[in-house]
Amino acid sequence: MKKTRGKAPRTKKYVSLMLVPHNSEKIKTWKISNLRTKFFSLVAFFMLVLLVLAGCLALVINENREIRGLQASLHDFLMEQQDYVQKNIETISEVQDLDNLSKEKLTEFSLQVQDVTQNYIEKEMKSLTVSRSSAASDPSISFVGKIAELKAVLNYLEDANNKEDKLFSELAETKDELKNYLDHLPTFWPTSGIIESGFGRRLHPVYRWYHNHTGLDIGGKSGNSIYAAASGTVTFVGKNGGYGNCIDISHGNGLVTRYAHCSKTLVKKWQKVQIGEQIAKVGQTGTATGPHLHFEILLNNKAIDPTIFIGKKP
Image 1 (cartoon, rainbow, N blue to C red):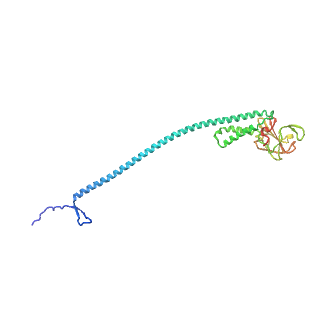
Image 2 (image 1 turned 45 degrees about the horizontal axis):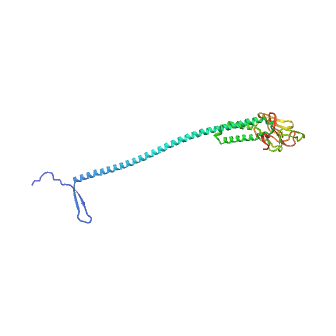
Image 3 (image 1 turned 90 degrees about the horizontal axis):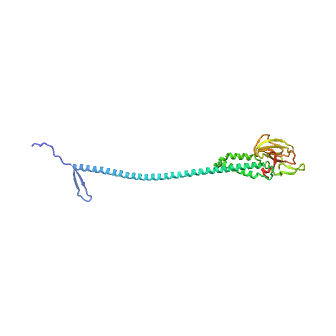
């Protein structure tokens, strides 16, 4: 018997799916051909891809929505900040305008105060200078109050200068001029002690006759310090008759102070001295009954009452 030649018939390949119930012995079986398996696998793959793409797209859309929300919030914030900055700029501009106005008013006020102060000082200095010319003929005149006022002004200006007060910084030259003027007025009490004999007519303590006492006798212990009543230049040092050891100091404008009966002199002729500087020591040289300072103020070579300048007590 001859064998038939040819290709053997292909047997179909299946994929079996078996379902085994838990409480039954009957097993359900499904046969799926290989072609169908491939088809369903491909469909499943595409569906999986679509699901992944859909998920990614949804994620991108959600992130995009969040970004848009953040952009909107940022835009609103920037607009608020822009409005805030604009308002601040306007406020700063207003403050600058007010500040400029305040500076202008302050400068104007400062100049007015400076003018008033300077005019007052100049007026009082001229008034004091003019009044001095009549001091010799009018014994009732006193400069103590006027000098005290000028000293108060000077102290105020010096205090303002120490505090670096700009309001009075421009008055520095006037302040220095006033200080120099006052320093050359005999206002410093020349020694410690009280007035024992005043200016004017009196009974001479040694010769026992009435005469015009040309100064003040200020009591004190021998060796007590004698100070310059004002800044100036020493024009005489030495013995001067009944004055004994004597010092004359010129303060300018015809003013001279004299210090008599000194036990010891501490300055030389033409020496510059400052107000309050020690120049001698109290004694009783010359015609004197005891240690004291005979203090005179001469205006244009004429003796005037020293209390006009230094008052009646320290």
